[in-house]
Picture 1 (cartoon, rainbow, N blue to C red):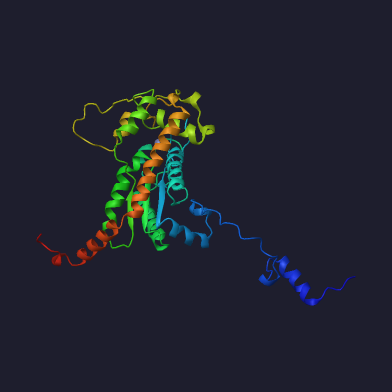
Picture 2: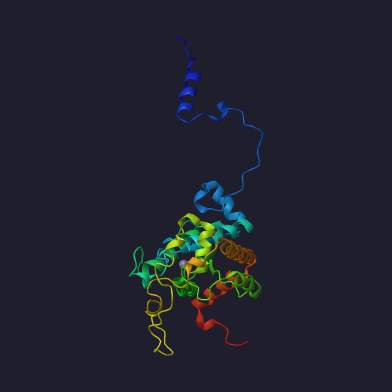
Length: 308
Ligand SMILES: [Zn+2]
């Protein structure tokens, strides 16, 4: 039996435990260029996260989805697939950090359908607020919300409004692309249907581009996506039951018309607009400066100048 000197034996044991001292580590290969930082929040190491906050100029994107029925033929997570894909495509053009899967929005109107997860309004607002607070505490001071779900539109605008309720050192921005006639013309040229909304031609096309194996085109006609117009006699009024009154199958349009090419085009065009927004948010110092001044004034409203 060979006798191993004590020091070498210790190194062997430590190496086995993964504690090999630096001096005894194998010689490093010639320095390779650092791999690019991931755009996925959850894939970053803690030290790389610090670099990513810097590289993103303190921006991040939360794609906000939902779990709800999408006609008889699309997956429950459709909206998150779509807004995450847009966000990831945009982040590849203009570096930012994309927050992990976030399924918490407003969806009471689909509670009668299987697979809907409808959290209470207080929980939804608290969760989003605490998520933003935590991102800001980690240096991400410019938070971009990208909505994937029609039922969360008002919620997210309201969330932006209530950011002014208390002093904070970060800003929340909601992605709201301005009308782009050239873009709409390009899309309209490819469209086959005129009634198109939830789980219709466009959404089906997008999922065909992102996760084609999850689309069941052959089932798209098993339920009606037509407008049932059951509140036609109600004038000049908004009521929460309006969607159920018109589209009780949680389906609007004709999914069978979906095509991958249309989905690709729409996702690319949307990602271009989002990349442009991310760039402008990076360059924006006015929002935070105005917020700061606003919060100072809210503490002493009587001292707020009342003249020009
Ligand atoms: Zn949808």
